[in-house]
Amino acid sequence: MLTGKPASERPLRILVTLPDVAWPLDGGKRLRCAGVLRALSRLGEVDVALLFSSSSAQAPPVPPDVVVRRWLRASPPTLPRPRAVLASVSRRVPVHVGAQRWDVVGQQLSPWLTEEYDLAWYGGLDHAWALKGHVRARRHVVDCDDVETEKWKAYLAARGGSGSSIERLQRRIELPWWQRIQDDVLRWSDAVIVCSSLDRARLGNDRKVHVVPNTYPRPTAVRRAPSGPPRMTMIANYQTDQNVDAAEYAVREVLPELRRRMPDARLRLVGRDAQTIEHLRGAPGLDLVGPVDDVATELARATVAVVPMRFGGGTRLKILEAFAHRVPVVSTSLGCEGLGARDGEHLLIRDDAATFAVACHDLCTDEQRAAGLVARGEQLYEAGFTPDAAVAAVREAVAPLL
Image (cartoon, rainbow, N blue to C red; front, side, top):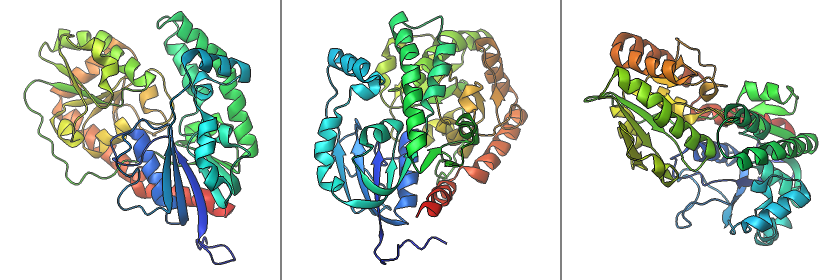
């Protein structure tokens, strides 16, 4: 059993790098960061390094109920595009990695890098790749909540006939570079963390690969009061390419099909960084809502939650959020992969615009069918996707290492 102390009786010392803040809990990445911190802070003293987060620097980046030893933000501006591309090509790393000022990050972290940690937990492949050899730790764990190679394979398959030719060429060039980084990290790390058994299988079911599920906190109260015109609600962080693509697909292809069947139907796009989808504003039937103070209010008014994802990695918090709030869901196959959710049992899965629209129509008009999906979706959420599940999974993954 893990006692939380090595033989010297001092607390375990743990370094955690995060790609985003763990508070407020208003996005999937932030929820995952919070779950990791909550688990690791119960095992020892945690130092948190927040790398390249675009969040406000005013508030502490950790949940109020999580105690950490110290934290810092290291978010220097990225290199100008020409220099980033040059750095990427010369080092054979994706532009996302080559554009970051890792030298500045190293300088800001330098007081911590003289310390020897019992455990280093890296919040992404890029963190692990860049900090390899610089962090002194007995054990190294890398959280790959997105399997980058699978994400970009899906992107190329879904977007082969659209998007700019330059963007598609970039992704094709970067794919083997991500593979090289991924293979290297899997080789030298002590453990790799993914968010589903599907992603574990994609990494070859290696014994050092462990599943820590994405989770969603139980709502304090579930208020369901849909009224007025049918509302299809998509909640997302529109800073990411995959969510922008999903929003464009929903507006341009699904919504017209739905409104042919239900002329008063509305699609509501809710979430942070909505400026990236501003070009969609004005489409018939679209409410471009953007960020809100209370997502629960939006979900209470939603008739159906839609997850029209065509590429991306990890598992979608959007679906767990809807399950927890008892909202029926229509998703693409990719949108719900890794959750164990089954078509017709927990949600409806449709992969083309016409049938996606029909599924939304059916759930708006068949209350009994929608209620059955809601009940079983909530059961699936309670069985494996509450915050306690993440805490237990993190402990199970790191206990043998310590």
